[in-house]
Length: 118
Image (cartoon, rainbow, N blue to C red):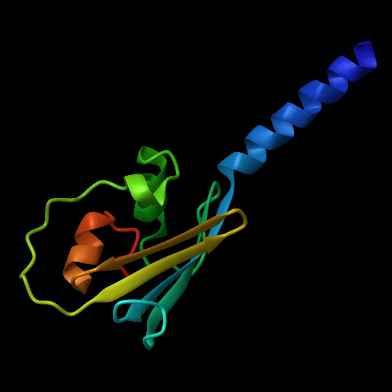
């Protein structure tokens, strides 16, 4: 029984560690969906911070504040012009897929608090 308890403790601690580690590929496409031209793509790793994202520390901090949820990222309050030039942002990770279209690049960056600022 003691061996079973040790195994469960080790398993749960490894699950907690892997949940904190995060590796993403973030892509921005021109248009209303991912069928448009790819404008840019970066990688982002959190815990530890890394990847090709130019603002990796700020992006990971924003994701930490949103409990790792791309849907819950906070708006940084930046004012944007109401120009319709749609941009579609995607995220792919080990167990995550996110896709959202924004009216323009400024709105994308504003609504995702540095995560898509690349």
